[in-house]
Length: 225
Length: 183
Image 1 (cartoon, rainbow over the protein chains, first blue to last red):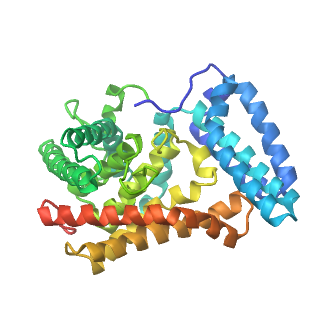
Image 2: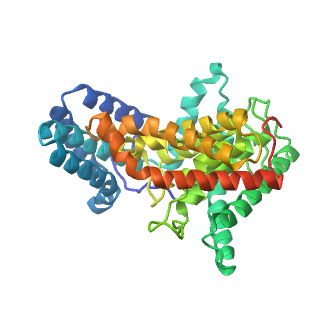
Image 3: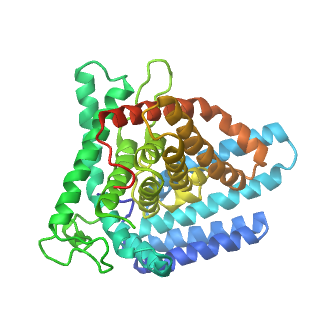
């Protein structure tokens, strides 16, 4: 499972995921608190500086930015045409978010998925007094990552089967076999977890046995994200 | 309290929503534009898994997108997408699945496709738009009523998806393979 992460040897890449996400959060709040144009300029310049520090190829960053910036540009264009007045304010508002999207994209491109997932688990651990169980969240995230390729394959398989039968335009023919397959898979997986002695009432991190196929501690066995 | 089965179902549906985003868009005979199936996953997870597990499934999906996996249709992902114009819709996915599930548990426990359709519209469209439109309005610097107008174009496609989700959910319920909400 490959993430959007792009490896380079740079000080930005070496920063912890928590530092980068905290910085992004602080930058977002600051930019939203400042007047539009000032915020946009500040975030844009710091984004360009971070981009230079991170040694990322410009083309790759621009490719990530293309879709949201095109959409923002389109929305701005429509508004400027229709409304006529106040386009400078709108431009500042749009530029402000374009700059924030640049900063956020840099965080994503310089942080490994595994590091981000670890960060989320640490953040959710704070919510433990509210009944949130970080061990369960970790297990579910690991299961999801593990099963994305399998389910993508199943979606493709079922669609190919429908094409072969000439019913590729029938939605029921796509979703019903797919959903039934998933529900059956859930039965098997539940049985597999139970057979390994997974106890959902246990607060400790599951998967401490080296034979555990689906425990979160088995993350190392998966290809790097 | 989450059982082992709840964890597994939520994780598998999160993976399904991701898998739907990777598949090429589905052509529909009567529509010129093929539909992307991802937002269908919101309605399906809510209608079939219920509020708690459905909402959890989409929460897992959103967390993985934010973590930088390219799981959204078109291979997009990362926090940049969340901060972007359509970010509110993505953040509202878990709420949409939760609302769909909550309503389904109350009003559409059988295999009646019409009831399921109403539930999918309320959760998968209204609740998701309720999160997405204010966000779009802030990010694009446009007044709220303009943002609402901009979204009208997407309603026909979303209504079709609600119909598809309702038909699929009804068929799965009739097939009798569904785990009960309180198993």
